[in-house]
Image (tube, rainbow, N blue to C red; front, side, top):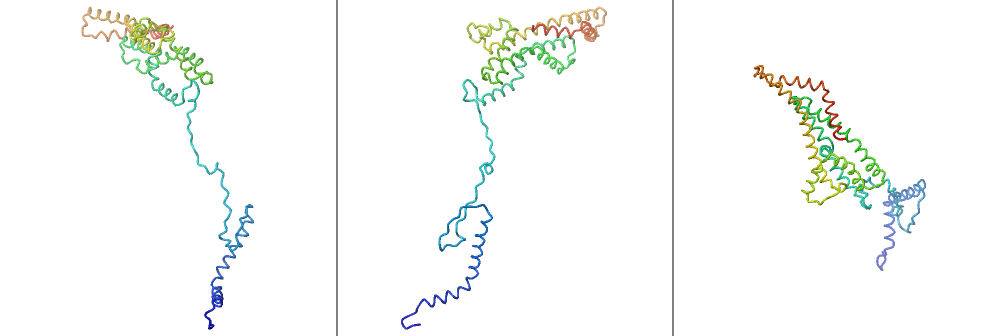
Length: 297
């Protein structure tokens, strides 16, 4: 110490000497880290060097940002559902088309039952079974199956016209869905009008308040009910004609049993074999099917 007061410089020097030994491991670690950071980038791809300010530590120096991965590899998978076609002129949107298709699939049995030849065929075959006196032979499955295949046979030309005039041009993109629907109803309407009585059409026109309308301009809501009523009328007329020969056999059997005094014998027991024999001898199923097919000619 000097008389003028303490001198801070020698004390700082002593302090630096004492702390040098304590900081030596930290300093060595900093040197090793600097060497590692200096040599490691040599083996990596060349990157833009970042300048280090004087006096700053190499550890705190900013490093180059890692390369970003392409968006195609890092982006998650996505599912896009688009409804196209709604912007085209005269075209129904895909959503509406899906609703229409689902509706047609749900009412397809009704279309087959009420807009084809199925109604008349299944009723006539049911009358044949009842007239024979065999309510369970042939079974309902056989009657319905035969009616369906006869319907497919009779409706073949109509289906071909619908396919050639409406479905194929629509799938080829030549017409819109609305035009395809209009063209598909033309052959079906022609078939139904051919089998419909004029008085039934006039009745439904009057019932709906329609003015006198040309045949080609008749709406489907008039044609369909008129066709169904006409088919029921025709089927019952054919059923009545089928019942007549079997009814005659029932009368003859009942009269013979009454004359012989066999009142306890059920007439049905004797009449059933005779009716089956008559039906087989005249080839009844072939006659019935031929009559049904020719009735739609």
